[in-house]
Length: 379
Length: 248
Image (tube, rainbow over all chains, first blue to last red; front, side, top):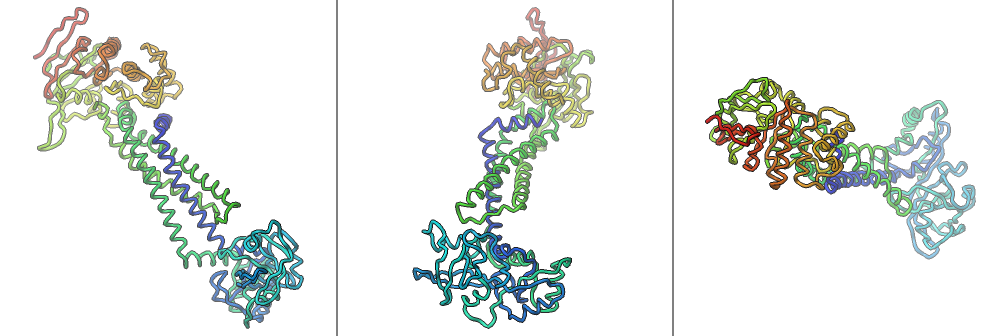
């Protein structure tokens, strides 16, 4: 009977296409918007992700997310180093600085100061120059996107460019790869001591302490000890990412806006697919009536309608999720679109499509089940 | 009412006091008013009468599609009122073949595939059912159109496919609702000749609802209906083409 259901379905190409496209449109919209949302949210944690080889972030106890900067004193670094179970701990500066370019323009940049001796938190991939050049006086390394933003006409990286921050000279010694940030400002890496010179002077300047627990101790346990003994906030890398993510989720309207778009995609998709599938079923009522007259039971008729719904659901879902993935892939390099298809996105889209086709087929199944086989005797 | 009752062993259909009421209270419409009818095996019986006289309702009751309000209907010896809905559906699938006024072929299926549908409903493997469908089509002279879609067939050819579909699972009873009304005179004659041939087989009966007087000559038995009653039954000796009226 499924074969008959399938042939009935594809026998009306216009309606078949309409239902499939309805589901595909909904899947595309849901998956694409959800992926952009995930991509945007991921940007908020990009700077935590970029700091590799560090499992513990220590900060003022009131810090809520990565950009919530509440500087600590140098003493705090030594207190953290004194906690039993801490293998090592280093300074980390994060702040905003204003760079004066060689053409006289000003540009806000994200300034990251790495521990002078270890350079913990250094960029993962150097595209031009060398990380060790950062040890030179006044040296800075800028991220690729920032470089292109500041000097869009450069065809190759011009190492040695000079600019000023806080009336201090900065020399570009390298270009690196870094994840894009939520603020979209260029990212400037320098040594911690240099960063404190670039930044407006304050009594306390240390934004974070990056630490690592001793082997055999869980990061959670070390965090707990740091917090108990110093009163500072200490979080694992994952926890800090999660805190940052939730801060943006809760304090901004971004999730609500995306949820509304996703909901609209679901409603519009359900409406298009539902209406077309309903019309398709109504058009085929006589055929269902004839099948019932010829001995097809209600369960088999229900099975046929569900089979048809599942078929269009699967094909529509595949098309939608495929197009969304293709869109994300194509936009990855060509634009600055934040797109990250996290695994729950296709899963959630599949659930949404399942609900959509179940809602749709419920109405259609009912219509097909209540059809009186005597309808076939009505000319 | 007819008073011509036959030996029940030879009956394909036996209706006794069949009443069918649609609606309730003031809106109640009595479509059948105590119908008695016997349809013998090996015969083509016609139910004829003006529009709204209840002939299609009677056909639906005989086919087990409609439940009579009162009375009993036995088809090939089985009292339909004793069957549950599921049993009735299965009974229909095994024992009754349907020919509809508008053919009701599935437009996406080829002729052979359409004929295969009752077999598939009965659980035959698809390939075997389609193969059998092609054989049945060939047996009624449609062997060259087995792969044609309904839209590429004439009305007469579509009705022949529908008849092949009704015969596919070799049912004892064929019920046909106005099988010639959508056809021209020539095709109508051909279809009735085919139905008559089918009816003449010993273990099969054909009941045809029609208001087309041009096809009355094909019926072994003609039940004239009016206002929910069978007014009279004519039995025709077709070898001499001379009608014999019995009953009222």
